Image (cartoon, rainbow, N blue to C red; front, side):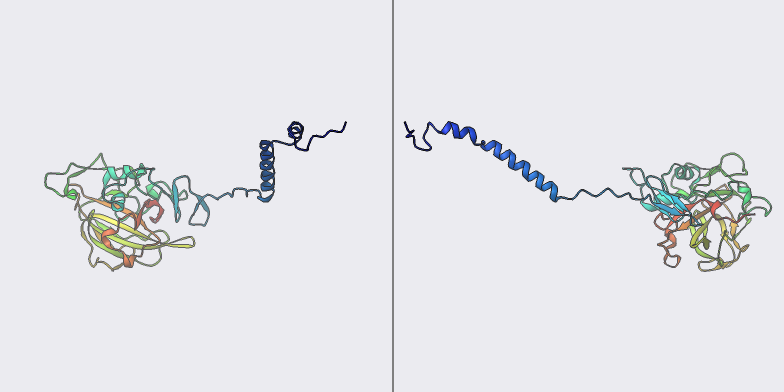
Length: 308
């Protein structure tokens, strides 16, 4: 007998349902197809680029790679402050004020709390290899380890008594932050021609810094670079004849005379060299900011003193 059931009748639905995929299966298949098509459309990500390590350039042009947390500054790698370390009170000037700071300031420079350009490896380590503004020509002067005394009530900081620890020695206890040279009161302090210097030195500043101080500017050729260095002569009794801002000095000219200004009771010469930052110009320099870290960086004297 012919089956008279109408298409789509309830008796026929189970068979058709078994042949048709469920909505869940259809959705999963569509998602997989979209993912496959998306993968074909997107290009593969580029390989990460390698950034070369920053490098400073030495005097001869050789690469001098700077390590972690340092930045190149000409021929030197300058350390950055420790993460989160607070700046000293007074800002940049407080970080750089090593002139006449004695053993405490030198220890700060050695500890890396201030910028300091160290001795270049090709420069001799011994003080006997160099010439100084005081002392006999055939031998270097004695070096002092100076400790600042406790300030007296009502006395200015530079009027506090100081003392040398032990006798003068043939090598300085540290080159960081300059050196303190033993001298006799009234002894002549002469201008020295720095290694590679071009032309005469120019007097930048005469006044109170580390006691009576004369600051001179020297143009120095280092390889293919021309740099300028400021040399500080501190604790003078008085400046030399005709030594005023703008005066030009030949090697051997008298810068001043040794004394104990700003260092009562201890006659000495504080000698310090600072490299002028490339962005600073001596003609625009405020003499009161000569030791500001934004303007100059303390430099190991052995990098610039003339050799014997």
